[in-house]
Image (tube, rainbow, N blue to C red; front, side, top):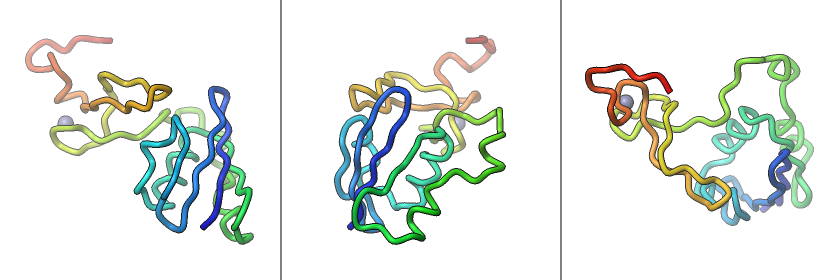
Length: 122
Ligand SMILES: [Zn+2]
């Protein structure tokens, strides 16, 4: 079991993992039950800082560091969620309040509510 502290501009929270996230503080509680590699992908996408504070080997620390080429990547998306209807990457979230521990419901462009017919820009 390792303990990882995640820092972003908005929050600092820790989670504990043995390959699967077993415990997590808000607002990361939605990650409980996720495998490490999925969590790493989200941490990298969001450019959060992840610091392994206990129980880690060197390999774990290295893998959590952003890859140099990713740092220059300007057009990253803040988070990856899947469309409730088709499972594709979703850009439109409803009822999202991460700091209140709610990830909401997500839809791709084709399936977002109100998308049938008129293509509204938001
Ligand atoms: Zn969809």
